[in-house]
Image: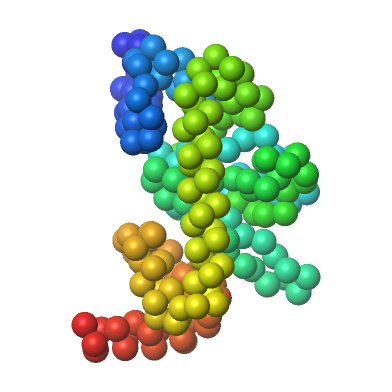
Length: 204
């Protein structure tokens, strides 16, 4: 990492480096080039990174904060697809990869800070440093597998088990989001979530 970065930037980029190093081996020079391609993005609570009917050319790595990706159905009802907290990536990935217009909202639940990278920039990085293509391929595959597991869980698992899976996926997030948002993500009513919690407390 170049020593000329301010302390706040060094902290952010060190966090990103640790994230990358969990997946691929990377040199200081390669990482320095990579992190220099990101742009810092601050998002205030209840503000949007993405709205429907936009071109999506950026994906975001979360430094701190909490965001949600969701869509609104024809009746205006919200359906939460993903939460993103520290060390997670978020975007409307279907729009990002396909070039189609976005369908999702990506909204900050808390004041948040992210690092964004453009799709065209990534394509250049893949040519210059191919190991980053492997990094993003692994991350994308992992996200696909997680989404598939979530779909199967709705068919095969009880709501209580799905709630426990949620707690493993998002440790400590219950302190940061509302009961309604958790219930919405699980596809149940808040009252059902309260009953599940009480039952689990009694049986623990």
